[in-house]
Length: 484
Image 1 (cartoon, helix red, strand yellow):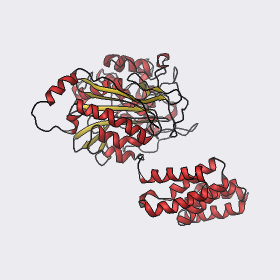
Image 2 (cartoon, helix red, strand yellow):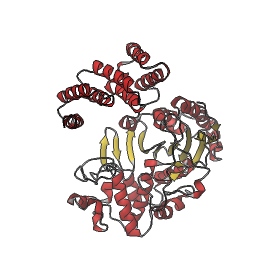
Image 3 (cartoon, helix red, strand yellow):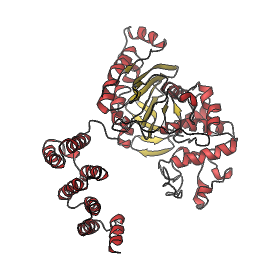
């Protein structure tokens, strides 16, 4: 798929930078170079190629500094079916990039003396969802903002919210924690989430196209989500009472760039609170920590603050280097959006990124993805026998890391969902032959046999799965049901 390029105009400050670059000077770093017209021109050429390579439908990008926006641009399509392009005005779901914006609002309330970062939230708000566990009384705003409340990211649909770790002891990413703090802040201020964000963040920073709720004005400019196959998905439109501090922000790249500039400068915060926001509060991984509502990574180019977003059909990323006074944010409307994450960072800020390894998204050109897509294509075009032959051929010519038990398992379930049961069985049987000491392939083969009505072989496969992994709860449960 080829995508139309939509270019914006660099702001006037960039012209001044051009004259600076024309003077004799020492070589500039990658981050300093990002502020130059040459770097912007290179981005305008590289981004469409990346979108095409990763099969990403559309993208909006903005580069900013401590003094304001440097450049922004729209690329690709906001809707694949209508071929409407992404522009600078296109509104995207920010997904988890919602969290740092809410964090800034909370920290402003801290500076106003309305919230104590280290006082239990239960001191001023009763959360019925945690009433069953006394450890809920240990959770403070600081613990929520550092993702250490011990809560899951999201509870099971219709299930009870549980505390899985002692609050405040270790990092464990949690959207539920932000929802808890959101409800407490709403009760404290008497405002809705969107009212609070508008008063404390959107209006002061000039984020005129941002909201935690669906706005009628977004009609005609919103980017629709797309599946990995490029299919247009249904757009969720959070109405009154549905705002979510962890995930429902709607915004543009230029609006979010204003937010990055504000965080770089500590705008609207006391010096101590601004410093605390970007100071490691809890360790995450090597080179990674979390500040107050935002990630921090230490790299060869200095410390950066960053965050990523991942909603269905929307992927986003933001990173800024306060010491170098530069940052970049981009939004995509495709399930494949993070397949170009590493390449986008290389094209913009460069350098090393512990966060990329920690997030572990599959790159569009990873060996495993190349093999998987080749097998899926072969099955679709020439059938399962040809795909099995192609598997053996590719295994002899491609890197070993492209192959594991989950490769064929995924292909088998893809066929099972398509009601191609016998083809699925053939793939699962190959997986069992390839990984005879792994429990999961036998479990999957048993499921396919059951779908085909072959109970005897299903039992045999599940028994082998349980033999290899006595803790296989699914296998034990299915066997018990069959025997009854």
